[in-house]
Amino acid sequence: MSKKRGGYQYGSSGSSYRVGTEKEKKRKLPVIRILLLLLVLSLVGAAVFFAKTREGGIASLLPFPTKLTAIRFLHNGQEVLLLPDSQVVVNPRDTVQLVQVKTDGWLSWGTRVIAYDTDVKTMKKRPVVIRELYPQESFETPKTVELNALLWNRPIGKVSLLIQLDARDWLQKANATSDIDKRIVYLEKALHENSSNILVKTQLAGLYFDSKRYADAARLYKEIDDSGKSKSISEKLLLVYQIMNRVDDSLNIYLDLLKLSEEEQTFKEFISYLKKRKSKEEVAKFLEKHQQEIPKAFQPAVLLTLAEADSESKNWSRAAAGYEKAIKAGVKDSDVLYNLFVSYKKNDETDKAIQALDKYLQKNPTDSDSWFQLAELYEKKGNVAQAKATFESLLQKNPQNKEVLTHLVALMEKSNDKSGLMSAYERLAQVQPKNRTLQYNLAVLYYEAKRYDRAITCFQTVAALDPKDIDSRKYLLDINRKLRNEKGELASLQELARMDPQNAAYQDQLFKHYDDTKDYKGMAACFKEALDQNPDSVRLHTYELQAAMKLGDKKGAAKELEQLIRLQPKDKTFLRKAADLYEGSGDYADALKKLDQLLKLDPTNKQAKDDYLRLKMISMNKKTP
Image (cartoon, rainbow, N blue to C red; front, side):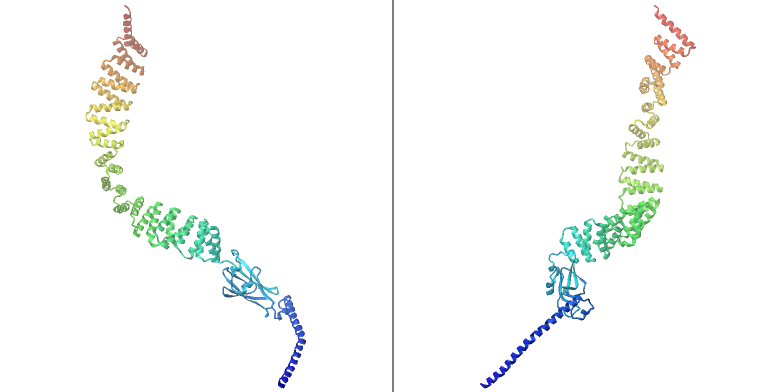
């Protein structure tokens, strides 16, 4: 028990010690608080002093920060250290996390980062997608976010984030809209972000083309084409150049396409475009300049085109040489041989022209026109036999070929082959039976050959075709006389006299014919008809008077004499005959009138005076009973 009590005494003693200690603590507590307060006041004062002191002053010696030195981020998981006033470009799809703020002090009390339009706290806690911070933003206009570092609400530095779309975003926007103008804008921005993106360039060039912005389309297609030749892009660029009428650029693209594909159709289009857009001389110059750039497969065609250009320019010697080169290069088209023939012919190289045309006809034996031209060449060269043989071969195929027959006639005339000429005319006359000139020429040939029966037929055909033709009727008159065909001769004379009434020879010949045959009725009828057409012809009235006198037609004779006196009132012969005729008819009064007219013309005419007195006495006696 005593031990316990004794123990209690240690305990009491200890208790007393503890009590004393608490009292000491109580005495020390105000002192500690005062010291802490002084420390806090010192720190606050230092902070205030620091905030108001410039860099390099006393504050620089203190442990408190004066300025921002860097902000450390995680950008898409990669560490990024931003220095004050620097900027980092980010995409709305990116993630960012604020990791650390670095200052020039070793104490960071009172230091924080803020942004005026976003939640920095979330950014400090975890990586956050930028788009989540700005859900309403489209970012079509770049957005700048400033991150300000503060010390007790006083700025000590800042950095910024530039949030903008990249090529991928703009391309997505372009693909999502149906508005062509917006698509163009989006693709332009995408191309600005990634100028080497061929896909974007191709799409944008296509939109430029659809919008008829051909210059912009050409620029982009050219950039794509320069980066690597492509048949599809070259074809699109060619189309744009053609629309813009950029001829030389189009031709250069054609050259590129020929190298890329060597397609026959492309070459044909190239030549067609070249001929359409350039003059004949320019076509030749272009092909000569770029001939080595054109693939070997097209060289024969190039040579052929050059030859054709020379042909169109009528440079026949160069054209012939060009066609020869094209043939040697392998051109198989037989038309080239024909063009070669034309070139030699135009250049007056007949022998070479014959050789070229002969080779052409070996491949085209049914070409009648070319056979005809071959015959003409033989004729020009003076090879009549070969020309005639060629013409004859054509006639075997087509006996009705008028053009061949006409040339054959000319050839026979030139060679003075009368027999051949007559044969040619006969065949031609079968083809053209109503050709007046042809029938006349054939008739003359028959006449000269004394084949009068056929000559008559042909001349009669000519006369029937041309009622005014006199020459054929002259021939008919001559032939009938040669054949002693009086009936035919008379018919020919009658026609000639009617057709040419001013020609007295025909009338004289008719009169002689009727007088020789004593056909006075025929004479009277013939000249009466002639007088109906020419009533004032003295000659015709004289013939008609002769016919009446021969027929004893005193009345008809008197009528003709009156007409003759009218036409030739001073002709005493007609007055004398009329007076005698009237006296013989017992018409003394008319006889006296005619004698009176005669005496007025010839007062000294004793016979007229005597007859006048005699008839006067007879007339008076008849009146006296």
